Structures are given as C-alpha cells and as structure tokens.
Image (cartoon, rainbow, N blue to C red; front, side, top):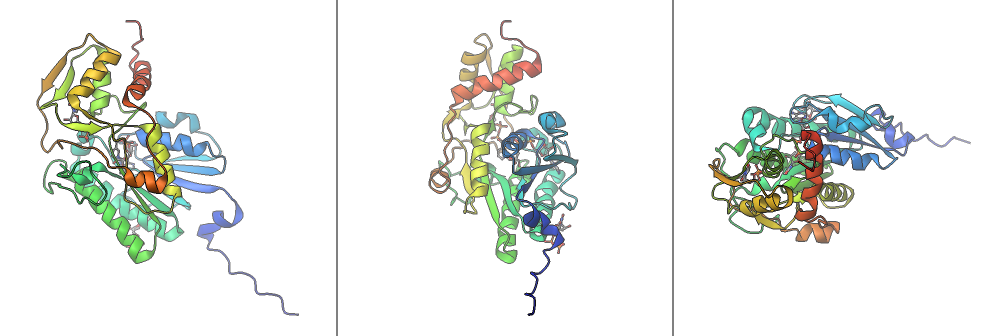
Length: 336
Ligand code: NAD
Ligand code: UDP
Ligand code: UDP
C-alpha cells in the first residue's frame, strides 16, 4: 500500500497559520494616537498577537506602556521607509505624521513615509500573504467642491502646496494599494479617516481640538484661525478604532469614509470648548495657514451599509473625556 503523499510543506513564512490559531497583527505607527487605541482594542482579544513598529517621530512608548512586557505584545523601533521582515497575518498601516505642523516640518520625509513606507508594507504583505489596511485621509478630497464628501469624489487637491506632501502622499499610497491588489492579488482595505480626537492626542501638535482644550486648561485665549466659518467633523477615537477593525475584518476593499458627520465651524467648536471647560477664556481670531480646506464632512452611507458602522459618541460627550486626560497630563486639577 502506497502511503498517501504528504501535503506540501508550508512556507516557513506562514507557519503561524499552520501551527497556532493566533492571529499575528502588525500595527505600524502603533505608538501614536489612533494606533495605541487600536492596539488596546486588538490586545483585548486573547487570540491576537500584536507587533508595533514605530520610529517615535510623533508617537511615544508611553502610549503603550501597559503592554510592554506582555507575552502577546512586541514593540520594535523601526522606520517604515526601511524594509521590514516580520511574519504576520494582518497589517494595520498607520505610520505617518497626521498633524499639519508635524507633516510640514519635514515634507520630503512625509512623502517618503507615505510612498516608500507604504510600498514596503505592501511588499511585506505580498511576501507573507497578509491582509493590509491603510489609514488614508479625508485630505485626499483636498478643499472639496462637493459636500459632504462621498468616496466617489476624486477631490480638489493642490499638487504643489505646503499640504501636498501629506495629501498627495496619501493619494499615491492609495494608488499603490490598488495596484498591488490588481497586479499581485494582495488583500487590501482603505479607510479614509476624517478628523479624530480623544485622549492621548499629542498636547502640542497644533490640531484644533488639542489646541483648544490645552488653551482652555491653561487659561489662554482659544485661537480660532480666520475666518472661523471653516468646518470640520470630529470622530471620537473609540468609534474610529471600531470602524477600522470592522473594515479589516469585512469583505470590502474600500475606500470607505470613517468619520463623524456632525459638522461644526471652528468658532462653534471654540464656543463649545469654552462653555464646557473654561467659560473665562476669550476667543481670539488669528491668521490661518495656506490651503486650509473650507469645509469637511463625511458621507458615511457606505460605512453604514457595508460595515454596519456609525459613530456613537457625540462631541459634547467626547470632549470631557479628552479634558480629563489633558488635565492629568498638564497637571491642572478641576477646581482651580
Ligand atoms: P500620530 O502622529 O499620533 O501617529 C502616527 C505614528 O506614526 C506615530 O507614532 C509616529 O511616530 C509614527 N511614524 C511616523 N512616521 C513613521 C515612520 N516613517 N516609520 C515608523 N513610524 C512612523 O497620528 P494619528 O492621529 O494617530 O494618525 C494615525 C494615522 O491615521 C495616520 O496614518 C494618519 O495619516 C491617519 N489619519 C489621522 C487623522 C486624525 O485626525 N488623527 C485623520 C486622517 C487620517
Ligand atoms: N519589502 C519589505 N519586507 C518584505 C518584503 C518586501 O520591506 O518582507 C520591501 C522591499 O524591500 C521592497 C518593497 O517592499 O522595497 C516592495 O517589495 P516587492 O517585492 O513588491 O518589490 P521588489 O522588491 O520586487 O521591488
Ligand atoms: N484651527 C484653528 N485653531 C487652531 C488650530 C486649527 O482654528 O489653533 C483650524 C484650522 O484652520 C482648520 C481646522 O481648525 O480649519 C482643523 O485644523 P487641524 O489642524 O486640526 O486639522 P486639519 O486641517 O488637518 O483638518
């Protein structure tokens, strides 16, 4: 009797798929604001092993301190513009500075991170057969001429402006994702993230919610950039993480908008922060920066239909949670 032919040896790269049921997940940029909340959520599932790679440009080990030393967790100092060899099943690719003052600080590096960094993560996904999710941005719509923005809108982006390193960088990253998908059959997911806020935001990153809360707590004027009628829509970070995980686990490549459709002018935001956090501070109009989009609000029809997702946290409920975290970090107690 001839023994049945043994099955072909699995590629050593895919051993985790054969010998354990754990899911090994890479989070690039996992020491950052959204990344660290995503890691917290992924670590709640005991079947997940999480590897974070981060160069600590805008993120911090402190955001991950509760996981350091945990047997299912690993933290690697690494710049995604360099090749990376790890064996994983899923890749959440977040690495990229997100705040205008940081991404404009070294625009060439921002482009390299978006283009070479994404290319490397796609090369890795191809080699190990991993599914990869890119955190793209509402900035791919530029200063939008359609409102609210559906995923079908191609955008209105200045290719040579000071924000272009980020906007165009993310647009190329999306193109790379789809080309690897079409050419190499890589499983991709693209989230277009709209403005997100919550605990652990970098206090001095210049973004509007972190600026206003820090200013209110320090008793400084809230700096509204002119004209103040420009709008944004703010999503609380726990809602964002829930949307990203649903997108990764679902069957749709995207791009899918993930954001909160509640739209506010910057003056309204300042007034809300003033009312909730420190009614004594004044609101001061200051100069704006070039190419500031005048309005932004996601159309989330696709996220609702395809992911069964919509945000739950209202701005008025989310701001106090962020206030609490900022008070702790700034050392400002409630009764001043
Ligand atoms: P963040 O700056 O807090 O996190 C980004 C992380 O990436 C940081 O930890 C940083 O050190 C790391 N990083 C940057 N360049 C790197 C490199 N070359 N190699 C390795 N690590 C690198 O920003 P965030 O708000 O958490 O944003 C996360 C992702 O979400 C980004 O891709 C951003 O473009 C996207 N996004 C965020 C928002 C938002 O409102 N926060 C909106 C749209 C899109
Ligand atoms: N890459 C990586 N890790 C891997 C496999 C590839 O960082 O496990 C990088 C590799 O260095 C290359 C990029 O991903 O720069 C694209 O890889 P791909 O195999 O698609 O292209 P090629 O190497 O053939 O140019
Ligand atoms: N903004 C403001 N005051 C600040 C910082 C920002 O009025 O102290 C405005 C800014 O002009 C923009 C909006 O807030 O219209 C959002 O800016 P942010 O940098 O937070 O995010 P992005 O422009 O990337 O959406």
